[in-house]
Amino acid sequence: IGEVEIKQMMTVEELAQAMGKDIDHIYEALLYTDINLDSVEPDSVLQEDHIKMIVQKSGMKYKSAKLKEEKERKNTDAVKRPPADPADLTPRPPVVTILGHVDHGKTTLLDSLRKTQVASMEAGGITQHIGAFLVHMPSGEKITFLDTPGHAAFSAMRARGTNVTDIVILVVAAEDGVMQQTIESIEHAKNAGVPLVLAINKCDKPEADPERVKKELLAYDVVCEEFGGDVQAVNISALKGENLMVLAEATVALAEMLELKADATGLVEGTVIESRKDKGKGPLTTAIIQRGTLRKGCVLVAGKTWAKVRFLFDENGKAMDAASPGIPVEIMGWKEAPSAGDEILEVESEQRAQEVVAWRTYVEQQEKLKKDIEVIEAKQKEHRLEYKKKQEKLAHLTWRQRKAVLYKANKHLMFSRPKERTEMDENTLSLIVKGDVDGSLEAILNILDSYDCEDECKLDIVYFGLGDISENDISLAEAFNGVIFGFSVKANESIKKLADKKGIKIKLHNIIYKLVDDLKDELNCRLPSTVVDTTIGEASVLDTFSVTVGKNKIPVAGCRVHKGLLDRKMKFKLIRNRDVIWKGCLSSLKHHKDDVQVIKTGMDCGLSLDKNLEFNIGDEIICYEEKEVQQTTSWDPGF
Ligand SMILES: Nc1nc2c(ncn2[C@@H]2O[C@H](COP(=O)(O)OP(=O)(O)OP(=O)(O)O)[C@@H](O)[C@H]2O)c(=O)[nH]1
Picture 1: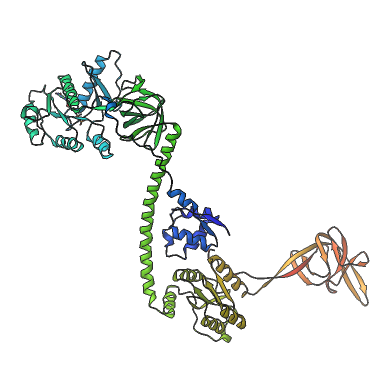
Picture 2: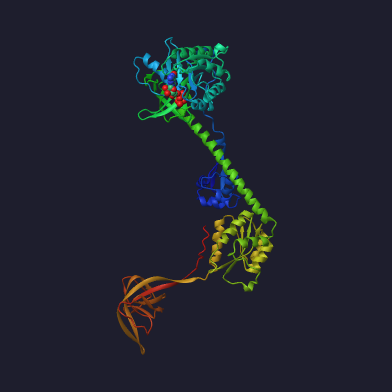
């Protein structure tokens, strides 16, 4: 018996492959279940009990050793280290996000802040938008600004559970005051537990009214220092670059209060801020390092991808040797670009990175499969309910009534009223059909319903029903000269004996196509056989003469055999101008003067067929055999 290795969540295709069968075999086996086949595609996932049933019904055994192995697949994910020992912590720059209403000047502020750097760094010139940049203060302090303006990026990161921002600079235009997105920005910062610094922008404008802005903000719990709160407010002009350093100092002061520290040793942890693809460099990500110190050669994982760090760049595209916590860095060496917000973790080796990615891919697949299964199961449940309803409608009917229902649905199928055996047409196959469950019986009736060769042999379903073969079935078969077909049912010894005694055939099957084959055999033997001529040899008439036997002159043909052989015992036909003008037995076959039984290819002979038959040169003599051939039904139920 074949052994099939099964696993959870196998698709129809996978099971067929594991069984070494085609997909139709699986569909066929599913006919016995209450699954609606319309909902089953080759890539549909099968339930475990259905998988087992299919394997068993196919006369095979299943082996589910893999199941265990799968359940126990070891978690090989990479995770963050436990919190660092406070003794290992060193100060780090704050990470700042700028939020505010549309057109209040976020982009202008970021640009101006960046420009302060270009000027201070003599090399300057190329500033590149990479998602984050560092501002060096004259005091030696540093601030990292996230250059992903708008709330979208901020909330997207937060939604993913990553919060890299330490401080929010809330930009409010002095002439506009608090607007819708100002309020939203405040909400975002509050929800993330991130403190604010207020930048009142566009103070160069004559209509600017910074005091009004501060008052308006009171309504949103943003209380500036002059009202006794802890929010520092700085009046700036992003456009003119006024007071930017004051704003930066205020930010540093807040950062000091927050005591931002990190562990710059050990394995690196960080967050992806932005990813892009560079034609020459491949995938590049801007990241903020949060723990450890990133160096060339480190192996990182993020999402379902990994990197062996080949180069590190700052926002000016300058190569860096190392990036410590709070510092933005562009990383080159990714296999594929990770997504913004993905957690970056350093692992010990490339092999370990691959293992982590494999695990994460596996987990994702499992989750997808789980969802698929839920959808499929819901669908199947729906179908089961429908099927049940249908069955309930039929359940209270007797088989005769059910037959009537089916008859209505399948008008051309002939159901007989009781007839005497003597009346039975010899050209009829009478059937008694028994099945184990409604589903299988219905499947068989549906197949019988496709019978459309009434002109060859009539098909008469005398009775159908559920359960093992009974005495009643035998009586019916006897009365109608029928054959009993059983599907997944049994016939006990006494029933078998009774059937033998009465000469009644009981045909039991567990596989539909075998039942159908058997049914076809029964139909075939009810069809009249036909006779087919098979050519044994061919000869051409090269000469004609006659011999005298007693009083008669008998025509003789001088022939040469050019194919096969001529055998005296067989039948012969004479062909003239492609028409058969005579068929029958030879009267004589001679080689020279001798009577012979057989003449082979290439040999000459003289033969006579009938004393009245004259030959012509050019006639063909065919030696042939008549074979009786059993006709086969032209019914094709698609099995
Ligand atoms: N007068 C003056 N105009 C400014 C100042 N800051 C920004 N602007 C102008 O205000 C307009 C909007 O500035 P942006 O920096 O694009 O504003 P934003 O908040 O980034 O806007 P979105 O990107 O649409 O959210 C531009 O025309 C700027 O030139 C400023 O300090 N003074």
